[in-house]
Image: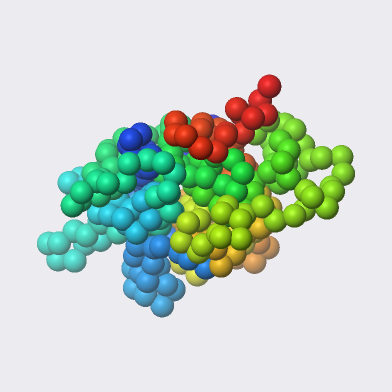
Length: 332
């Protein structure tokens, strides 16, 4: 176990980003089509192929999922991933036509100090293609890919991942791009809200504070009272090797959203665009009631850990006024 999304066999992850733009793309590529669904809780989401994932619609599997910075411009990233898949003959077959299925979602990072004057064409389509081509079983965390330009209320955001194996042998893992309006840490201290679920000091091992003060529980919002609904979003992909139907994948995404609530304070606000994709590679059977419930419980814990790791592993952006990273502020 690498404590990464790629602990699920047949899943690869690739990044591509542009330091000058301070934004990037992360592609989750499946070796075989995966059953997928989505749950949206934030008030300002930006989604590609979201309607296709609705339970009443025909296509049940996807070839890849794309997470991107760039706000609405970043939706182009899915085109690049789709192009790479098409070059490799991957996709939904209709007669002689092959159409890669690539849902995705975007986060807002347009005000982080990077140069967003890219002219007629935004860079995200090319970044998506590069990310898909780079997809492998090992990948970096923190300020990379879709997490390069991400921020939170008080610290640099980033891209995190975590995984777990249940006693049944079923595995579940999560990938999160953390660009939350709220805070991932308690008050102004080094403690992560997700501390009760931490394993092997994966995000510093600081635990929780000995007591909670009124100040610690006060809202810390990116932009304060001037926060807007288009500047924030935490995106996640949860993958399991359990055999799930599309409705069961939807339920898994819904339960896994609890992980956001365990790791971000506050969350699911009208100021966020929070989205969780859930996918199943369908290798191991699971009980449809108790088993699926337990799987969702573990998935939520894993997602909370992934969120904390995204902030823990982040590096500050090299621009005046940029937010500090957790390690720059607390690692000493």
